[in-house]
Image 1 (tube, rainbow, N blue to C red):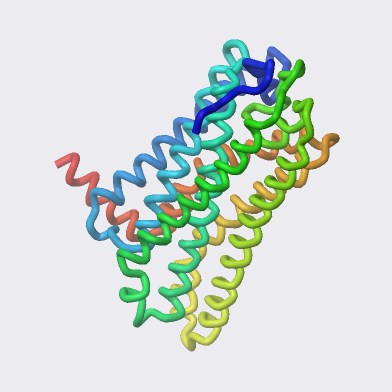
Image 2 (tube, rainbow, N blue to C red):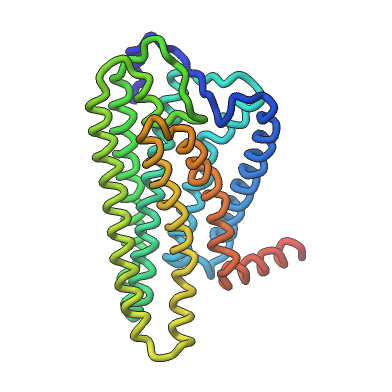
Length: 309
């Protein structure tokens, strides 16, 4: 995709989280810590799944992809955020459009990866005897391929419609990254098509993802409640607990962010809320999926013994 600039603006100024100079160093240290934990956690989980054959199952295949997306997702904008805390908050037009594309791509892809994980849990609990047939290597690959293709299509739609806009004089983005809604506020041409694209793409992602996950867990819950033993119900719930927490954090914080940023008067609140799903959630996912997971703990123990031997 050629980034053709039809605007007189060649660069943007990112306001960041705060314009107060005394807060720049504390914010830098905070985001640096979050970034380090995110990279180490997700890279560690990717390595652990790759090195241990016991984790080469559909469930961990999806988790591998989730960690990969979170890692890339964080690397798209966090280094730039850190740089902006200690230097000028400037990003080129091309850099901004590139950041927008990859941000949209990884966010949309993660939504559908979470849907695939919910479907995997549904098959494992509701039709366990058919699990190996239903969740074959081919099916898992197609689910992931579809997630990335849909994410790519959504990102192309957002970025392509943004490239047709003209940015005249105003180039101050009141955000810490190049997001759709803050950029639309700077356009000196009609944004009607962009708004339509935004609501269609985001609406489809949210509705399809949330409805699919809700139906999966409604069927899972119905099946679990029919399990006669308390131990069986507890074991079934434990396999879904981590994913439910991850889904609630990602979709909950994302929905709150977009609801607040849709209103100009609440842009500041939305900007701070977006920190949670753009920075905190990718950091927490490895902890959520590993702390309560016996398979991951066992694999980690074996790997450490192998390395330290």
